[in-house]
Length: 383
Ligand SMILES: Nc1ncnc2c1ncn2[C@@H]1O[C@H](COP(=O)(O)OP(=O)(O)OP(=O)(O)O)[C@@H](O)[C@H]1O
Image (cartoon, rainbow, N blue to C red):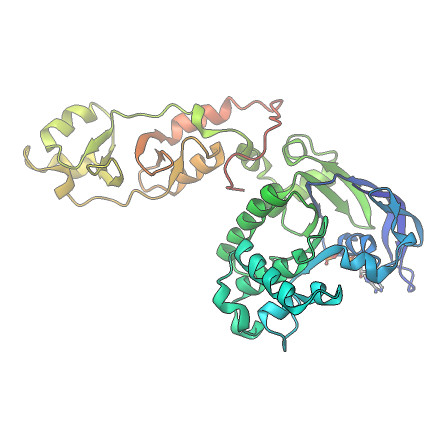
């Protein structure tokens, strides 16, 4: 546990970066500090490892005042990851990762072995051990940064906007990796970001800072989205907080239609019967019940009765959601992005369970009351 007790930081020019901060950061969980630029997130983070010293108040890590500890020693016991990784350009990947083990006096062999282990853990190809940072992609560099911070197995990991310099796709995969790592390692992670979606995805607790370095609210993400403490927090979360909340409600309760899912070898005549009146779209699946595409009733109106659905030009089936794992938000996303306005629900191995139209989704979403605050982790990892 990390505790901030009435902590204030005033820089020499008089800027109050952090003002009377009281915050408890639970051990083994991920706490995300969010807020607009300049509200004191980085300063708060750096006070934990004494890169910045507070003017007043106390910070304790596992009950021990950080001021009682030698700064260099303290920093070796706390992993630190920054934006653009901050790797040493003239050291190989393996040597970058082994920075702290070398400082701790580990012999070369043990440090190398640890580098190898960590490369695997963070999803890096061990063949890249001898490369230099500039020979890696931004996402790979960030992985090296995370591996380096984990090298001496510190209980605490400070991460300052670690994924903000990479593109959204790489960023999402780095977030997924961090979630996976955390399930295995249970570190006390303090993570700074501007991005509320990132905070909701990876945080067990979110601490929202307001300008002037004051804490506006600290709560579990689902609580924060349901009950922002004031107008500032509500404004910061954004007007789409309702949609974000859907991440906490499972998609498995949705009513899925199977009668409009037809095999590719179904003749048009049979499909017409299945479609019934007013059903504008049918989903065509292959012999393994994997989605192949949509066929509109308009499209097959002119086709011969014996033509097979699979021989008609199909419209791409778009995105799918996994019924057992995903949230209402993922299902809504899939429906909105689908050319048929319908979301395709699949099992974990990709076979179609059924489809749900936007209108039925609307009803399910409507039934999510404003008072419902599930205690669950976000369903799936869809933000
Ligand atoms: N060394 C410094 N000297 C003077 N003022 C500083 C110093 N470092 C930060 N500040 C100021 O303290 C305030 C808080 O800065 P800090 O970097 O902690 O905010 P932040 O929330 O992390 O911002 P960002 O999201 O933009 O990184 C800002 O007004 C900043 O300009």
